[in-house]
Length: 167
Image (cartoon, rainbow, N blue to C red):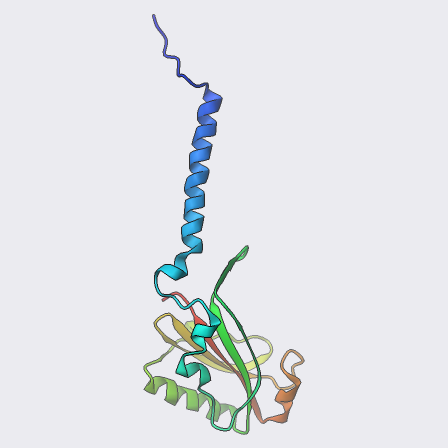
């Protein structure tokens, strides 16, 4: 009785299968890495800064600081493109939030509870969404050392953040 003998030993077949699996995995990682450039997602802070809402400040507000980042993929996952301003204003917290509610609703934005990001250095806040974009308006604790020192000069200090997320 003749027995079947493959051309390659079992060990070689295992190595070939592992190599194929690694190639498939790497292809998936590359596709995942390139995701934002294929479907029109805003990936640069400079693109967010071109949006009119990124400069929508309460009347008379003073910019105390700004920051942000481009879309990036790191060890811990994806970080959205963000553009952020810290502002001081001679108005109440309620006046600031009502201003953004009125202005953003008029521009087609919808309130979005899932996008509110309030930390321990914040008092209150709200968020709005339009497609892949979210806007967060967060009232800051003026006496918190993590916020700009100049924030204490104003009755209200707040953070305006524009974020490009997945839809």
